[in-house]
Amino acid sequence: MPDETVRSATYTVPSEDYVHVVEFSPFDCGSPASLLAYGGNQYVVVGTCRFKEEDTEVEGVEFISLQVFKHGVRVDAIAWSPETRLDKLPPVIRLCTTAADKKIRLWTSNLQNNSCDVKLMEGHTSYINHVVFEPVEGKQIASVSDDHTCRVWDLDGHETTSFRLRSPGVSVCWHPEDICKLMVAEKKGTIRFYDLVTQHAILSLDSGQMPLMSADWCLTNTIKVGAVVANDWVIWDITRSSYPLEKRPAHVGKARHFRWSRANENLFATTGYPGKINSQLLVHHLGHPQPVMIGSASVGAGLSWHKTLPLCVVGGDRKLFFWMTEM
Image (cartoon, rainbow, N blue to C red; front, side, top):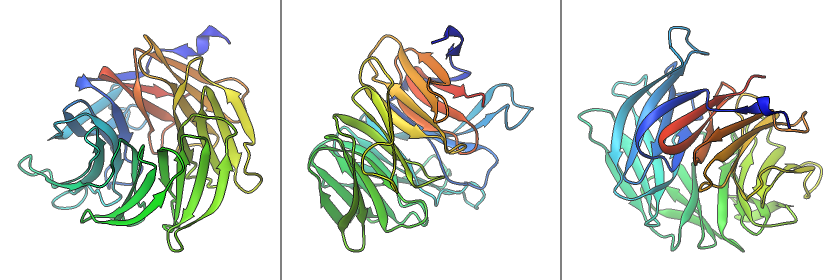
């Protein structure tokens, strides 16, 4: 593999804490800037990002912190609500987080007086690995946990649906238009699609190996599903087979995250496990046998793509690392 593909981050932004998770908002927020939230051991920081690729007056990256939520416990996952708008008066910031105390917190703020409303959702009995808002109206939240359940909640914190899983739930994704379809990935290597009306599984995919650590539904082309299992990435075409269409080794140790780009349906990223001295971000293109970019950062955690640029972000020790992929 040629060395020129190994790159340090295109941009970095300092943080006061170790960044465990980072998420770009995938929704239009009524602002030319992108919303970004990241979580550490005690806090969640919400801000806006602009990059020189979007605005030539920006030198590299401009990050403006809008609000800091005191979390009090390590943040494990973050999800943005489509109801978040910066062009309203007052603005609306809504997101939810999961934490090491097995609770989901729903945060709502109007960015006035640094105050916010926080609602606790309790019911999971083990670590919550992933959480997502229903993407059309944002009136429901789905979560998956090591307790072998996927649960759906309303915004009042009531659990409305629960699916019993056969192993820990690691990822959950909502169909971008059909709010009755939910994808749930399990650690033992199975991905199931549920109909929330009938509350039955309507389709399942099998990776043929384990542990499956992370899966993602390609929101720009919903026949594509990807995951990292052991140290491989795997891709399914759900119209063709329940077994992977493609599979390649990605990381020397275990792979940790898989995320599709929102800007290009053939582009996706995977990360290695945090804890190595240098952890790798690999950006892959379905038309290329090798990674199109290898990013090296000192111990990374979390992974998210910008909603329109081929740019992804990984958290690290007191830093956010951003990589732009030249396509």
